[in-house]
Image 1 (cartoon, rainbow, N blue to C red):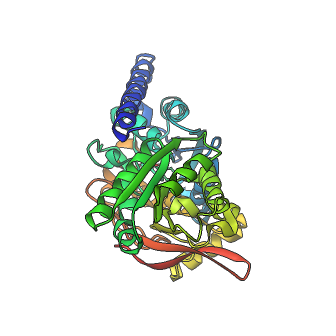
Image 2: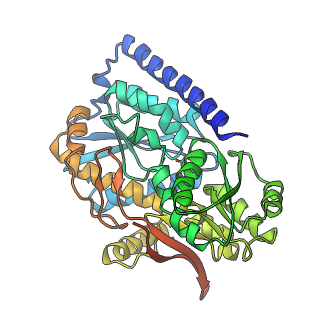
Image 3: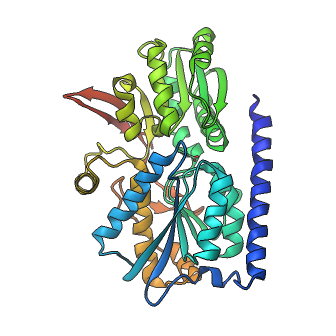
Length: 397
Ligand code: BEZ
């Protein structure tokens, strides 16, 4: 499947979903709930926050980590943000825009959330951009990396505490170009994030002299058997592989990579979602040696992160992940911004002035495009003493 054809199909699908979302907003306005009213979610001093993460589908474990991160921050701050009591309204993003867009609409038009936090899937984020822009309610994206929502389709109302797909994958390009002993094969889930991750990697990899030997996209959320693709990698003669998978797909891919005999012979690289959290625990030793780029590892050796890891383990009985940190930081952002006002309009204006966020990942700020300006790390999966972890090798930026 060509990159161009699947990208343009995706763009068309996203456009249709966006139009549907804006249409639904207009209908709800005709029904008596005006656009401006939709963001006045406060009752008394209470601020209503919509939390939109997947509780179903391949990315459900990522959503659970995000809910935990957001809850931890609230629990550590007496259930208040910016001095105001908070009511969290939950909605299931599901596996993509077909479920995520209507769930977000409900949080805004029916539940009257002041702000919506979350969104894992890039295609969902792209489908929501116009809805939030038109409704004038802020959306704080705490995972989805779709480049355009903080790029060519930037909105006053859309902010992101996570990463842009092109940046997290681009951070790995020069390392792989240096380390690979020949052509590199590219593989990813066939949807917005997969294509953008590959494009971001390819740009910096080729600029550093790397050579792409093959490229394949696998049906998103449906691929369980990777053997035919692994076979194509072997016949290509690739000397290394770059891949983007997360959640359940990352578990299957990495385990089958080892079963197929590629692990240890053809080094595997990718954005850190490939070996993060519960995914790594499920992969076990099959993941040892996989190298990834990410803006977080629970292994980060700083006092701020150690304190966070201890608190998270105490609350949830396991180590935190990048997903939990991104949502924890979204709560930290709201803590600062809500101190300046509790309406959607006041909150949106305040987001520009929140300054540095003292995060477990290290201090970061919003850049001019509303994206997180942050450091990326090169990580390698190591195993020893009965534990498996993403050890940090060095900074990438
Ligand atoms: C995305 O769709 O943007 C995404 C999903 C899971 C992990 C990383 C990115």
